[in-house]
Image (tube, rainbow, N blue to C red; front, side):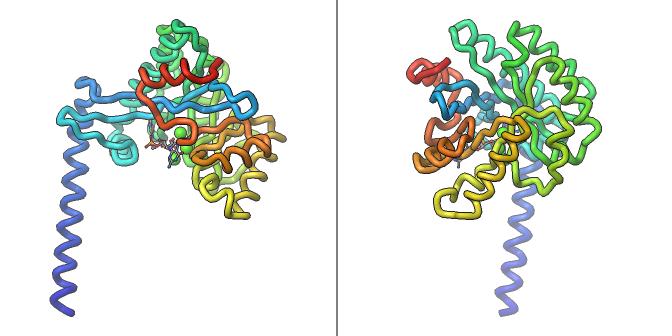
Length: 278
Ligand code: C2E
Ligand code: CA
Ligand code: CA
Ligand code: CA
């Protein structure tokens, strides 16, 4: 038994070493990823559950390394966040999203795009000016851009967030609360902050059909949001049963593999052309 535990300690310390080496490697590769054009924005449509039209899409970042390796955002976003690289990367995301909106406008689709904001970006004093500049440079309507923030971001940076959201709202940009229901936070911010939409976290949608508690939570979120005049978006919708439940219970928009996976820009345009869209 002694022998086994010694070798498992060695195993774990080797695994830790590998993991930290991987982080160090990704950290240094991230430094040059923008200039090497390794990033790509995929778009995942959101469907209006009443009309069936695509009004919006979420921009989701992809990293295609020069050696061909593809790394998911769940792996590299935390590293970018810790090192502060998320600030320039996040700027790239915002300006690329504005360019895409502009291209879509020229092709006759007035689609909105939402981008994810990390906590670190909220503390960037130049963020607001950057958003304003990106909208101007791409000649899009400010209300075509949306920002997604998690509850955690709101709570940890309350004063900065309040200022930022108020100014962003003045520009005409709208704001969604992402992963709603997972943040253990007080709900008082919902009436204090200028918020437009709530995105119900995928974890509640997943077992919706079989789990009475998840059903009850979703109904409560929809009722609360509507009484505060907020729109509700369900994420992670994968089945017709989930869609039907959400539609029947007046959820406004839905996003998930049932409709489409996140798509490269060209395929997203094809998708818009082959489905009923605005
Ligand atoms: P998120 O903002 O909650 O994004 C939704 C995630 O759920 C995406 O994963 C999307 O591909 C996935 N998803 C969508 N529909 C379904 C479905 O029906 N079933 C399942 N199982 N999954 C679905 P993705 O693209 O891997 O992104 C993961 C996370 O990385 C995002 O979670 C977001 O927190 C972060 N992220 C992605 N792009 C950016 C970015 O540009 N900036 C920042 N700060 N974070 C980003
Ligand atoms: Ca999101
Ligand atoms: Ca989410
Ligand atoms: Ca999430």
